[in-house]
Image (cartoon, rainbow, N blue to C red):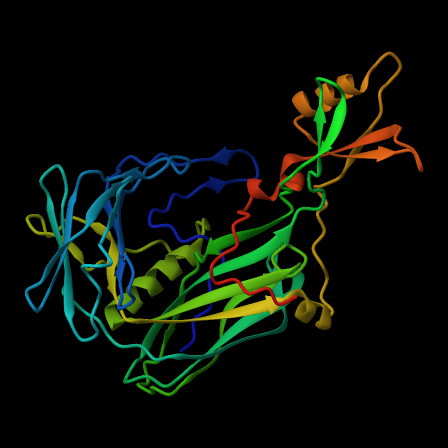
Length: 403
């Protein structure tokens, strides 16, 4: 049984906003519980694992309340005990030199919060997971706006090798892409003497990264454990972002999950798909494997995830997108501004008005042909002139330039 991917962000606390054709109505929640939310995953990868602790919040515009100063540790069925270090902001991490998950071993998460409440997860066995065989892409279309419009782009698919009696899978991905700002700042204007000098380090090319927030799961209740073929992982509309303009990379992580964990993710997916439609099926409790030791009826949100992991990366250069004859993204919000002094003004006056009061960057001068006489000055929005405002100019360690 294949599961369609939701496109909205998964939330563990749902607030409904209802509206009528007359006046908007926002319901007031008379009963509200501050519920502990646990987000934790350990694998057999040689890395530091993270457990995040927070609480649900009543106001949908508020930020989650983090749980500070908790004691968090993991035990296994071999008698080992591994403490997680408090990194602040509700984040607790293992030491990669002291703890790594082992396939076949059983793990339990323990949490003691400052108020004295103690929580423990069900013991979870780390299952093996099959290798990712290949990742590939193809030209595709996606329906949007309730099926009234379509977007062209690429769909990225995964093939997985046959596993050992694995019936339930989950995928997560991290996408990274190289991009270029359309009007990089190449010059500085010096008001002290009205001189123009070159910028020594032009912030023209950068990289952006984003982790998936979709629920990507797969189940085969029939018990067949053959290889997975052409599993859709991600769709990218080529004219909706700058992802495909230079080079794009996708890292996919594949996990094997238990039946209980699969049902946890499937329940979240169904809640997410109901949206805010009052006539849709109403949210139901999400199963968690974490419990309050002294108060078993207390609700806890989240799941302590334990799984082996396999990962694979794909690079997609711009030349491949051109070959597919897809529409391109245009920086429509990055219109240039060209300015000259009005009567009685100086170049300093223009610079002050545009850069300090309109928050634009001076990016380059334009001279009269064959002279050093300034004809006009070109300005651009900051995010269109400096790539570091939306990305990083540090090249990722894994990056390979293919174009």
